[in-house]
Length: 70
Image 1: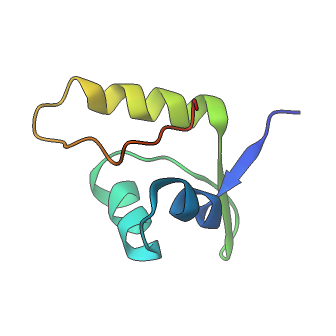
Image 2: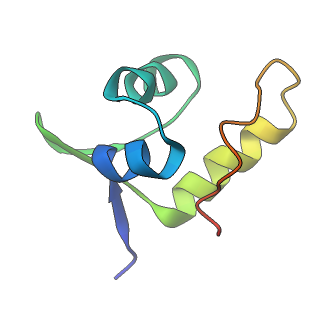
């Protein structure tokens, strides 16, 4: 089974808060799978796709020097 990353995992990975994750979901195309109203996750593969989709967008700064691929 592929590893699931929670919002908390993303917050730690990118060094951002929950509001930033929600902003990315609403405005930057981050698609998380909703298990329940309090439980959402994204797979590593989908997160890498999302990161790569941002690389060609000159309006988007690199999130942080870390990547899920590290």
